[in-house]
Image (cartoon, rainbow, N blue to C red; front, side, top):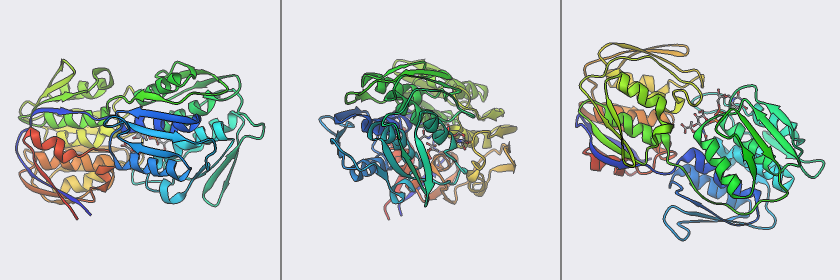
Length: 422
Ligand SMILES: CC(=O)N[C@H]1[C@@H](OP(=O)(O)OP(=O)(O)OC[C@H]2O[C@@H](n3ccc(=O)[nH]c3=O)[C@H](O)[C@@H]2O)O[C@H](CO)[C@@H](O)[C@@H]1O
Ligand SMILES: C=C(OP(=O)(O)O)C(=O)O
């Protein structure tokens, strides 16, 4: 297994490009299953998760081609009949595979999709996906670890459905299914993440009639058929946010090219509160780290609140603060796996349920550490950059799920970082 080795203590300076958003690319690529023909999704990041979804579509009978016509374009040819099945072997490595469920049942009338199961950050149920699809008229059975869904009437039917809690992929699954249902659907208490909006934009490009995506109420008038996608994925706000935190470390000065200010408001507010200077510059955001960060309290929330996917990275900054910060994780029940590893670098953090009390220390020291999940891995890279001495991060396959060649992006900023191939 590859490892990443960081020799820390060098402030980062320069500019870095943001890739396409993993969490937008995945549902948009899955949306190809809604229409037969040749699709092209542009600005797709080259990530392990995208490759997994490509394998899943290939398993169903689609042809998937990377760099189709241009760099970072994914070509998907959906044939006139697919095998509407997502096997456990593929779904277990990527929970987001569940986004094929809505398109499969809506377009092909049936689906057999492995239950995704939990992961390091929490239980991650899909009850809301299933409830929403049931409200659209799908019949759903759970058998032998698989969701079996089908449309007894041949087509789903529009409905009014309120999610019990906001779910990003749940909103995406039900919205995709409703796009091909008969009649009007109103979805309430929807997730408002920019990735939901980007998916809706891609669907509208396919001929879907959707309004309100990006707010908590989405209106969909179902259409009989959709045409293939031609869509460019938005920039990854979590990758961008990770680089913004890197620039906010003491002595940093980084331009994050492609960062969308409107997607970063909650993070930027906290970065300013710790004392970093954040400015809009043409095409992105520039962050200048001051001396030692000031402590701040952070509470994760669905968008537009502070993203849970940035909690681990923000914690690294607060580990170095001049005082004590309180981080409350409200979205996932077990998203403090990085704490134990940050403690190995000398961080002073106490966890009590949903709350981590982070007592800032003047410096971190390099150590061997182990990545437990995607954003925990990114946090360990940031901590390694800030620490004095060498940090060796194991299990970087977690990192490769969501960051495109992170070491190659950080090295030009002055980071002494390298990948050691297994
Ligand atoms: C591929 C993708 O886009 N992943 C993102 C997506 O994950 P994902 O879509 O899986 O996360 P959700 O928004 O669904 O989860 C939010 C909360 O709702 C709960 N829940 C969710 C669905 C359900 O049917 N029942 C239920 O109880 C979850 O356990 C969690 O506590 O949003 C998360 C929250 O911003 C991010 O951390 C992930 O990076
Ligand atoms: C938790 C994440 O991804 P996923 O939902 O694919 O596990 C993430 O992107 O931080």
